[in-house]
Image 1 (tube, rainbow, N blue to C red):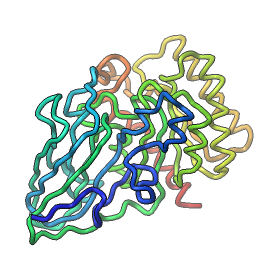
Image 2 (image 1 turned 45 degrees about the vertical axis):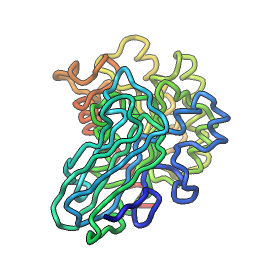
Image 3 (image 1 turned 180 degrees about the horizontal axis):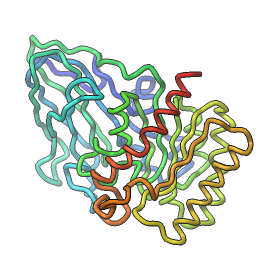
Length: 336
């Protein structure tokens, strides 16, 4: 059998900023985690990370070792600590397997999946909630393993926001809205969702400014502790990004929710005001989406687990609503 570590060529890690340069499997560098101490742990785990390669192997064994194991009251062991495998071209890839621990004490676990003998792309969505120590892939000695098919020739999309951005609470983290959009549009992405701790800090804006991206999407409404905090941070955050990237397409969104109350509506107007001020200043590369529209008008109450966090249906509906605007912004980026 041939064994590959996740750092070995021709395997590729997507969704981890600067992984190819640093080899570090973490979302935020030390300097950012020190500047924003609440992200000391969340900045190390890597929701949205994908291990990709092509192979003609009919059976692939996968071993994952976790540094941490932190049960999540809102998500199962499948959603939080497991890996999901998709096979085939990304826009039409198919689910092929689950690599999961047997229980909450197992930090090192193995599993396998099968596929055809054709040479196909494999995309493994890595565990959402934990810091990962090691990943190993094992195939037969005679099997071909080669670099994955590149994503569409456009820079990655960056998503910044709350636990919803991070994928909570889908039953399968490859069903987060940004993961769905990545498959549909065949565009790479970075998931900078931080559960309960996306507060619109300018230190985070400065970090994001250092990422080579095609589109920036931000929604941290749920994590702003009050209306005043959102009002004091939302437009300054946008301006910090815009100053560094005058031509970057930017999408700002209000919180996903079935029905807004008075406070929700006040928050939406703050976000809308940032958008309208940008338009008034001549900015033609900014868009706004109303989170109250994401779940639709029919059976919208079926779209969350707790009235806040989307389930898989909620994330699917979010992706359907966001897709046309995102396609427009990607078109702008390609047109540059």
